[in-house]
Length: 176
Image (tube, rainbow, N blue to C red; front, side, top):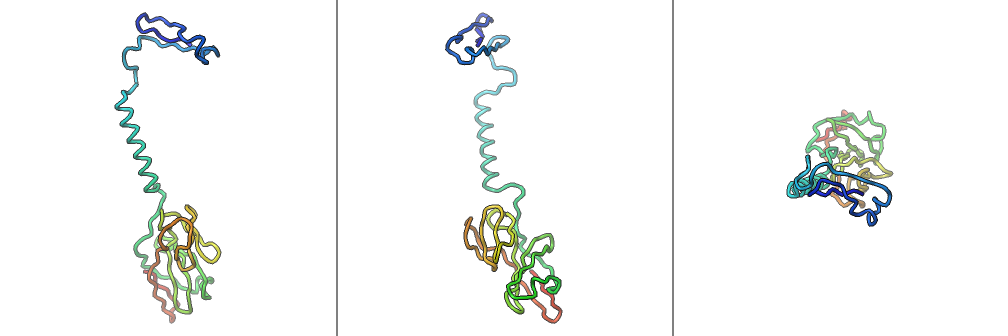
């Protein structure tokens, strides 16, 4: 391995026997003296400050989640015709619908009562899917009952629910 002698400008084999790379025949040279900064090099202060900024940005991204995380809207303001969803014909039935750009689980809890639950996980905006008789966050494994109550897995709050009004005469469920 050749090292550059900045005082003479000549290459010397300073570590020929001690350096494993030199023993393997790897050699390098540097053109010009090493007594000033190399082109494109940054000083220690700039390196450390940029490294700290990059680390802080990564920490914030991890804490705040990525740009793909969702937030459940505060209201929906839409209606569905219950008869259009066969799963809602019986108590305990669940229909997955998309209203106003939001995925919801509509749960029939009795003959004239329904729940509307956001399928956006309250933990970090992951997508919640139906799983057996309840729901499961695909991002962190939070489990919820059929009524949206948190049961286990990643600690979080209950699923967001929206007010519903059912008009039995028209078979219309208004959400929000």
